[in-house]
Image (cartoon, rainbow, N blue to C red; front, side):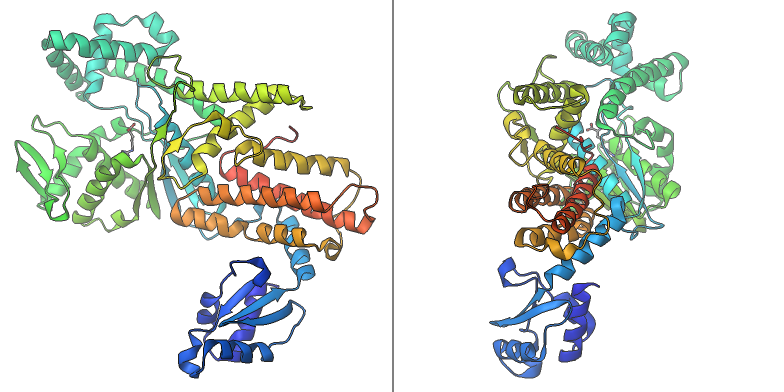
Length: 566
Ligand code: ARG
């Protein structure tokens, strides 16, 4: 039985208000001591021509305790309801145990496709920390939407097109050593790319050569195309290594190049709508009435650019997926770009452009030289992950923890710690990386949450052979059990909030609090101790079991894999 529904029914009958209004007005009191659910009587004051405290008192006197409600208090203008704890714990824990891995999930997304574009690194360039931020958020959002029943497509909009590829081909033809490039592609390609810029300062004719190569590439010249493809393949091998470490998978790697032959249509469509104006030889969409710089569609040399490819991509996605939402997980510095293209698409009359969402995120700061900078100035993502894994291993060794497979465990915790760091705050906040915080087993961190899970699992292992599936949960009633089970009950709310705001941190915060309450619970509610009566033990074990499942589910939504012991 749903407590809120039950109370809503009663209040609707008593007040004569419509059910929706009553339900919407209901609040969770700021302090648990005030009750589990509150109804503010202020909106009734006008209709009933009475002071809210008086209304609260009258209503309270007409409401009596029942199976679900222990008591109703009138405090000021509020009616405060206290649930029957025994029923609440029994109902919630049994429902959670029955639902198992699907507790908190929903099917509100059935029949709707959500596209989550994330990561989107650039070919022949390092996968930098901002791309990792995007990967962490995007992967988590993809999982969250799936959990809510949406059909999710994960898209990697690779930066694999543009004039820089002309430069790269030019540099490769001059200074590239295939053998070295094969071994360490991204570093080497970056090196020759940098060399190109140095040399072009001295000899500007290189720029012309590069332009020609890009033109060849655009025209489908065989040699240029095969070099471009080679660079792309080599880079993808590197990127995929990182994705494998993170457990991230994409449904599509269609990058900018994929749209290179789909841009003429965009130019034509925008032109037909009369949106294109000449500006210094370029064709642009004037957005000055919205206080934005023009959206450049065609450059003076006729070459199309980033924005045009993005518009072509959006149109393609609309036609291919007929999406419910098209989400771009890209850093905040590109906000203006997205506002420009969304506005351009709106003016083109593409009604679906309202379903395109830029999900931005802040900057990542790496204090001092604490992070590995083995490769010079660029921080390589793989190094960050590996350093986290090594540091985790050192901590586990120092703690002398009994861990079966220290490699696998350090890897999961180390990677989890990095992901958690990206997902612990509202995404628009800048992040300062600190190993101490990330790997603080007692603080707000992945290791802390993962440890809570492992603790729970170790209790369950000790209880092997005890059948608690039909435990009488009324035996588990206590303050800490109640608070914990209340948190268990609101998992689905946290997931829905996360999706609604495209903010995985609702789930991060949720699971961290769940673990905090769980720690408190098993400190004050002994479970496997000898003096604990069998029926109490079973009831508490059932709670532990349900909580472990939810910790695992919630962490999975963040892309974090649990370990059974640590
Ligand atoms: N490759 C770009 C970069 O590294 C990010 C691409 C973002 N996605 C997009 N559809 N524009 O900055």
